[in-house]
Length: 127
Image 1 (cartoon, rainbow, N blue to C red):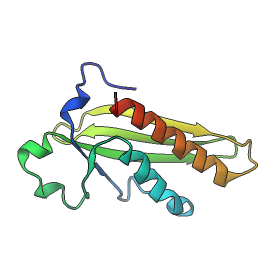
Image 2 (spheres, rainbow, N blue to C red; image 1 turned 120 degrees about the vertical axis):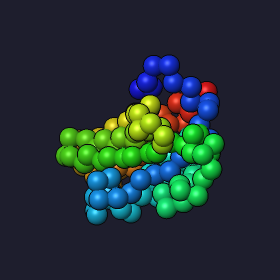
Image 3 (spheres, rainbow, N blue to C red; image 1 turned 45 degrees about the vertical axis):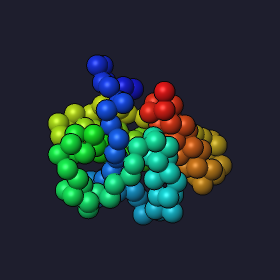
């Protein structure tokens, strides 16, 4: 989902927030590399969350914050990545990937959900 009247071409940078609110559950941390790869498919330049303050005002106006959530249940695993404008805190894009093996393999579910959210991110930002 993309917010109406949003010009994604003005954005050049993205940072992934990983704090107490947006932290991958401990059992899924092994998949964090794949999550960062999925965000990397946006075509935006990754900036460390600790280096955002080093960007110029112009660069900050082209910065998106990526926040993620993971819901792992027996029925399916859903990975959501929300992109928020750095200066306004306005949510602009929400990408979601879901996958299920009907409870047979939690490992395959998370991998499938990450692959699908990565594909959606890539399609959204690489038009």
